Image (cartoon, helix red, strand yellow):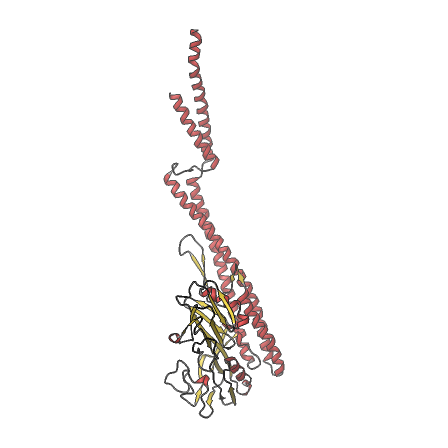
Length: 496
């Protein structure tokens, strides 16, 4: 009986030793060591999570490499724009020469924008805008173990330069009343003069003229008094309860744009995909979508799908926005605003009693004086530019035009280069940080794996000795049991 029990025990020992040697683990089930099993599994989860975190960081490094390559291209483009602006600043060039220089600058600026909008990583726009900035990189196993990658947008209109000077804004962009089809911008025919100590120019506006056309008219005479203009149009869209998550079809500047499931990011991407047809770009935020026409043209919008709706409003006029419903009053138009700028003080003057419509209804109008940025020609016969020691003259790379202000083109191109260089330096710092993070995670993973191994992994020397012992005991027990079973047969043989 004892031999049988010994044989059974040795069999279990043999099975356990063989299982540990074959799997390499001394804990193959919770029954082997309940506490050790729980600790080892928790460590396994952490090690696997750390491996995924390292993969995330490697993906982020690839993303940053893509962004840096795009910025390298943008830097080369802006360096060339800077060279051309310096060339155009010399007095030996004729006006036609500067026109030719401007042709190349405009093409280079378009390429800066193409790089910004078309550079993609893993199917999404790589360079940051309002909808994908900042980016959170998960670098650990716990909630909150994240690195935030935050970079500035690099569209031409986002590269800004500023210096002291004098400025005066026309009316801020405004929105028309909602209609069943996109209405005209409502701008009436008028005229005004721009005067300073250098000279005076007459600006005549036709009915329905765009802010861009007014900008061109001012800039064509900038050489007379040094006053030049920049036009820009912007407006906002906000989802209603009937919009979020549903299909939405819009017609922007007569181009149809549709998303099957509305979100601010989805609609923004759809608008930007067709920006070359509409002239309109978009940025998504958590509160809505900002539409921009960087060249100062009008923006018309119409809801196409019957029953679909969205809210549209102009800057500073949220309470006066319109909910556009397809099949009803579903269309509006935003007009643009013009910023007049000069290194010298200047005035904008009425001609007779006629009030120029671009200076008659500033939505921020308050009681003020002729040099108030909120004053209008409805209140005064003349408006005086205001001086700002830092931001009197504000330009974007999109404004670079050597035909009327080569020095300004040089200013903004140098600023754009500085901003791109700063962005690339920031990318370098992110890359270094993430590489150090990988080193740290690999060290933690190695230490955790080692600790788990001490708990979970089998000691081959010990298990081999245990296997050999179990085999000897089993063989000896089997031999003894066989001998004991043979004895009754021997006795019976003797009796016979």
